[in-house]
Amino acid sequence: MNKLNFLGILVLVLALAGCSKTIEETKTDPVLDAKLEIRADIASMTKAPQLNDDGSGIFSPDDSFTVLTHHAASQSTSTFPYQVGSTTLYWRNLKLPTDRGEVDFHACYPAQSLQEESFVFDLESAEDRDLLLASTKSVSIGTESVVLNFKHVLHKLVIRFYTDASYASADDIETICTARSTCRVNLREGTLDNSSSQKASFTAHGSTATFLIVPQACSEVALTVKVGQDVKTFTLDNLTDQIGQLQSGMQLTMNISVKEGKIQLEEAVIENWGHQGSITGDIIM
Image (cartoon, rainbow, N blue to C red; front, side, top):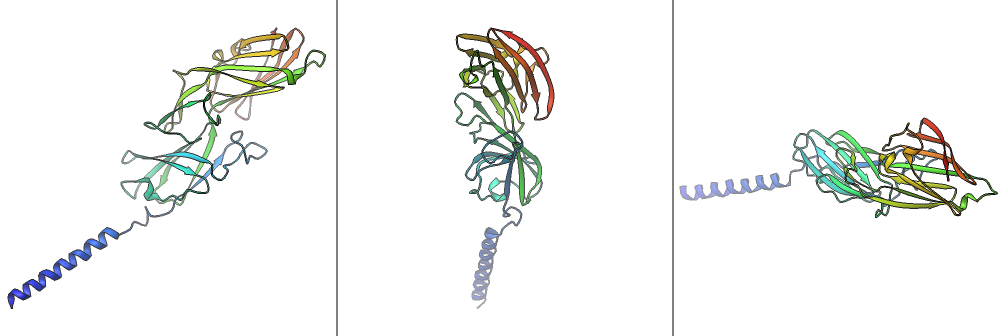
């Protein structure tokens, strides 16, 4: 009888242990199981379509960008693609070692394949040359939504030509821009390195020529302007000593009048989409 009682007690203990294990395995974490919404906005003068008059806007459905997260306390990172309007994300998907602390979010558009938090961006081969980066830091784990404000990180060069109708039409002007065209981007740090960059040439036709280029020294950027049989090549540093570096997120606009015998630079304005200064000068053909 005592032996039977002992066996009965043993069976009961094992059953309870089994129940306890099942409960432990199915236990959820309300913090990590919370849904995480990413809202992506675009700063002025960046990506089309869906832009407002000032150039700000939103991403289109099905646009994709790459997200890198960093948990400072554990030094753990996670990388994943995010498709606007399609991706459903939970905090658990970030594979965090804990449900406490803060996480930094970094993102890039267009989507990239990262190697040790970095990637090489090549303007010559890129399908979309408008490189945007975003960074939002110190987001508490369990937060319902994260706002990523994307900003343009290349330099935008805009050249507007004004012609003497008796000499040539602005529509007949060809502009070739030769400049450094590659850079290594560290997504977590938000930095661009063009120290080993290659050069490439890009061509535009008509009265307005627009180029997106890697931030670099003016001496590295050469423009060739062709008007009929007249051709003139010059580097940007030949125009002024006031601008040494074409910086990330800035725009240089040059207004150039083209007359028989010479190209005259009427004005060059550097903007962070806010006036910074202007220069004038002449270029003899």
